[in-house]
Each structure stands twice: as structure tokens, then as C-alpha cells.
Length: 366
Ligand code: PLP
Image (cartoon, rainbow, N blue to C red; front, side, top):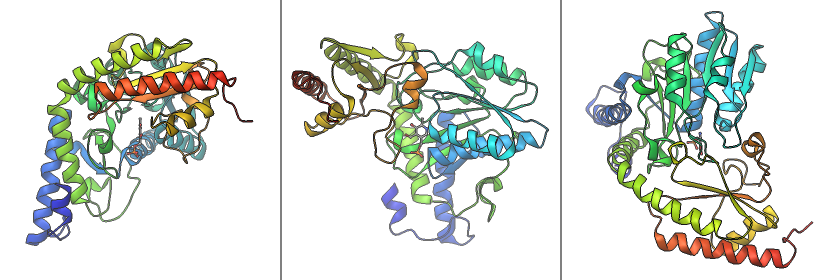
């Protein structure tokens, strides 16, 4: 789909001539596909350049709209992706608002009562992620959403990590805004979705030609939007099968890693509250940096902290918020192409690498 609309079809999707109309049709079909998968109305769907832009639009757009109603308080959680935490901190500092950052438990989940307890009459927005990118911790967004709707407090959730395996139902979750990123469910990087419930006031972040309800101006990226639409539909159709496969692979991976001496699993214990794609472990007796370097050399790509930064390995604020020692803590993630053989090879590489590093006192080069 991407190549089709990047190739011979040229035109501006907002032009009224035939070339433009063909591209516009592709965008609108994609919008309908996304809306169908979310349980939303097509007009609630705004295409963005990815999860980061969708989160920024939701956070800033809803907070500014709330300020127009005299609201001056924002609530978020300590383990949000920087795409939420940074705009929340920025707007609070820039506009002189109060920001409450709700802590998380050792498993990386928020306590629903703590989130709701932080809400005030002048709360402009609550933003709590559906699933965490490092620990794979899944939050009870439906319970938070129901309580906030009752209190007329706008609710945004970052569902970037949740969509592929958990699915999203905007009606059941009672969210007013939600962010998705296509590269997390099989689409290309550089396109995402902001679900913005019609009727909920949102101030645009990008002003210009007035495309997409005037909320997000700019020429539609027809090829990316169309590819995102197809990816959403395929991810939705294949979700149950993918989940089953990843649960089995994740159990195999965790079982193999936990059989290594001094390895502990992090994140929620209850499989209902964790993504099947994420296995996060802490390993005793090895240096974290030496470990990720040696694993990479051995052909195993793991993450320590978020990959979204500048490529440098930084201490993970997510782990700091949970109280887990972030030094030798790594995330292994599974995807569509992962096989039993990959998992077994991964376990063997970790076991060998850990043994080698422990033999030299942990492997720290300082
Ligand atoms: N939110 C979460 C939870 C993520 O994991 C990511 C990316 O990894 C983003 C937002 C940002 O999405 P994008 O890379 O499409 O900007």
C-alpha cells in the first residue's frame, strides 16, 4: 500500500481534481479502517507523524483547551514515555500549572485509587499509559476512564505499546484521547494516530491549512496514512493468534532465563497485566553496560532503558520509579517473526555471556 501511493499516484489529497481525489480516498479509507479497529467514528481519527506527535497533540491540545475553562492542573504517571512526560512537564512549567506525577508500584503499574485521588476540580487532563514500553506493565485504563468520565475530567492514554497485543476499545476505556504509532503494529515508522473524541475541545498544536478538523494542519501523507490503515486492520485480524504465540514464546523465554542463577523477572506477575511481547529481567553479578555490549556482540539485541533517546545507555527513569536496580536490567522483546529457535538461541547467548562476565568479576570497564 505504501509503495502504491508513493509510486505513480501523484497529487495533493486536499485538491479537488481527480489526482487529489484518488489520494484523498486512500486517506479516508485508512481513517475508516482505523476508526473501525478502535470502535471510534472516522472523524475522531487524526493522522500524525507518529506516537510522539499524537501524544504531544493530546497533552498540549487538551490542557490548553482545559485552561480556557479555568483548569490549571495536570495528572500523569511516573513511567510515561517521554512523549507524554516531556510535554506534560513543559506545559506545566510554561503555563504555570500544577503537575501531579503519580508514582507506580514495583511492578510498574499505577494504583487506580492513587490516580483518582490526585484529580481535582480544576484538573485539565489525566494522562496514564495503557501499557509501559520497558516493563510491559498494563494499566487498568477502563476503570480510570469510567471514573474520570463521571467527573468530567478529560482522559488521554498512550496506547502505543498496547495496540498490537492488547487491542484498544475507546468506548470501553472511555478515553477522550489516545495515541498510536504504526511501527509498533507492523506499519512504517513516521505515521501514527491521535484519537480525539469529537466534542471534546482540543486546541491545535499545528496551525496552517486547516486539514483534519483544523486540529492538525499539513498536507496528508497519503502513502503513510494508507499503510497505517492496512497495518491496523491486519494487526486487529491477527491479534488473537499473535497473542497466543507470544504468550507461549514469552513463557519459554522467561523460563529459560529464570533457570540461570541470579536472574529475576521484573514487571507484573499476573499475565493479565503484562504485555506478552516483553520479558524484563535483572541479572546479578554482572555490569549492565558490559552485559548489553557483550550481548550485542553475540548477536542478541536487547534494550536497557528506552531506545528512543540518543542511542546512549542512560539510567532508566522507569526503573528508578519502580525501585528496581537499573544496572543489569534488560528488556527482551518478541515480535511477529520470533520463533522457538530464536528464543532458545537468545537464552543460550544470555547464559554464556553472563557466565563469561561473572568469570571476570562482572565485566565492568571503569
Ligand atoms: N509512546 C510509547 C509508549 C512508545 O513506546 C513510543 C515509541 O517507542 C512512543 C510513544 C513514540 O512513538 P513514535 O516513535 O512513533 O514517535
